Length: 155
Image 1: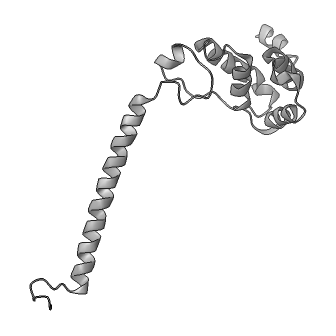
Image 2: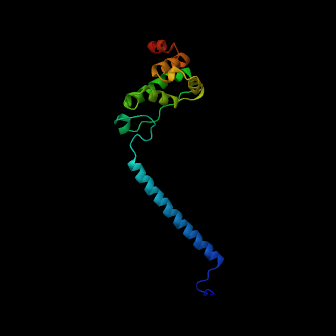
Image 3: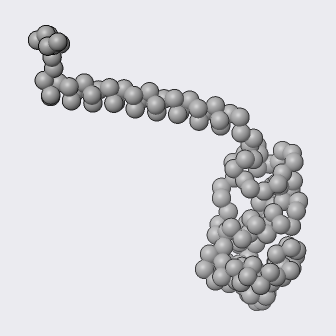
């Protein structure tokens, strides 16, 4: 069976048709993926992006807070960092009810020497990792400026 001249395509024409088919399939696949993703997002709970345990709605579930600043261990930034963490804890008390959630949240916002200290606490299996107040005392001992309170009162 020889193809008739009308049905026989040149290699260039076959290539063009193959490219068109590929593009149509890719667009169809992209649309299907976008549809599936939108359905998946509508099924997610508002807190699924956070690895912290949570039982009910809170301030952070209703509004989108900016990510907290990272702390690299600079003494001059310690007070700001701790205040920032306290705002997050205050805004979502159900999420941060457990010490471990607070510790995890703080730990994910560390860089530099602060991150190094945190890793050393993990390596040593420090009790600070089970008690948030102990962790804050450890951070205060290592990163706070004892004269900060005096400077703040003078201003």
